[in-house]
Amino acid sequence: MIAVKISNKKDFMGRLLATDLFDSYYVEEAVIETFNTFHVDGHIHKDFYKNDETTTEADKTGDFSRWSDLRSLCFDLIKGKRTPLGFKLVFHPDEEVKKAIVAEADAGIRPEDVLLGINIRFNGEFIQITTGTTFKIFSMDKTIEKAWDEYIPSFLSKSNISTIDYD
Image (cartoon, rainbow, N blue to C red; front, top):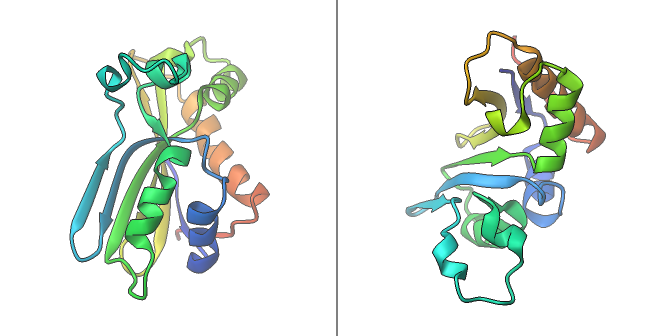
């Protein structure tokens, strides 16, 4: 696990809410605190799509909604003259990124046996991003965790998002 602070809140928020930078990520949870606390559970209710022929199989089989589907809702909750009191977003990479990270780590663990996540938190003062890795099987091997911990700073850097490491 690593934790970094975002150097430029305004720039980051613009990229998060007004661009497609994070659109491929899955959203497990979004909690936004303004005049009320709004909680979005990103788990998909598959029964909702039961009789819908316009929905793709990918929409019906995933566990979580994509950020692209929830971004405008979250943007509407956050935008305005007042800064939110705080928010928490829990994201997971898409299957393509996850498979690449697991393959790069070469730990002999299947992609479906690991859950990679990032938590994006704003506490009213600063934005912090932390990584996390959860295994569905027992493993002492930390190579996947290390690969994920290296991927996120690289992704942020390539996206021109500057961060500050904790001392």
